[in-house]
Image (tube, rainbow, N blue to C red; front, side, top):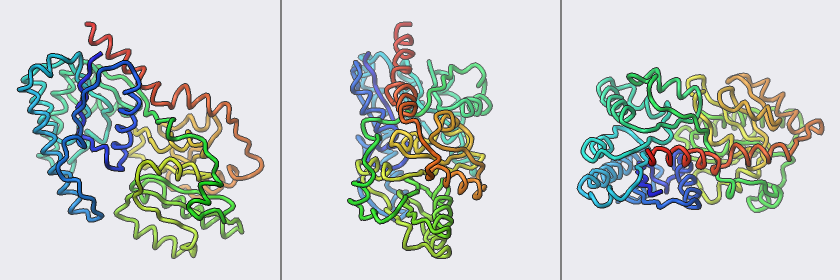
Length: 378
């Protein structure tokens, strides 16, 4: 199968989409496909790194414009387009270039990983949001297949886009690159990062932690230490509100036990993740349609999980974590105490079997390739 993979995502960043897409393409190359890609990182012209929000925004806008021109140029490259069996689109904000490609080249194409985040872009600007949704509606109607990560996100797509009930939507859960995220010896990694003085370590490894679990991890750490248990906390990833987390740790008197690692090279994320005993992933009710990649990375790394209801029910089924309501800090602490107690005996064979059969990226890729092959044959 000859695929043209078109994705706005810059794989060199450490955002969730970058990690997801980068892992997907790495594993996809192991399959019997002829792959040609145009992605945000292959077309980027500004590669500057900066912690300043304004410079990050300028970089993203410039690179997105360049990427869009690269996509539009495909219209005039008829030999490249005619040589492909299928075009795979990973859509970003205002997919004007992709819409032009479909309008003028009329390729057979699918849309990969469409979610609520795609549809809600610029929701605070009525004019931009309306144009954005019209472009998505056009592409969705023309596509041969759309995949999304949960039943909740499928329902959101059907309710948001015109004629949504008739769209060819398939639910394919987020997968994790199990070659990278895997069980490791925690003690050795903690020694490497000079964090081996703790009895246990909890935390959050991902961006925007203040909204997704870092707050709860810090509060749980404070409760453990107040009860005389030497627990440390690791917070990894970019967060524009990190100052509030620092202030929280100070106010709780545990500033010396909360370690902010910031944004680190992605190749180091798996080992940092695996040093945790408990990983937190706390989403608001508005985000329950998401399929948190972070939870799947925790599980694949042998880390127990405290998460919120939505698409993570499996953690209770395989007994490697608990689901709690956002804001129920007492329940989080109660479950965390159990997970770190001698009463908790995880069934690692059951967990590993679930990882292999359900969480591995290969499972989702196999599912997609079977569907894509049928589309190509029709």
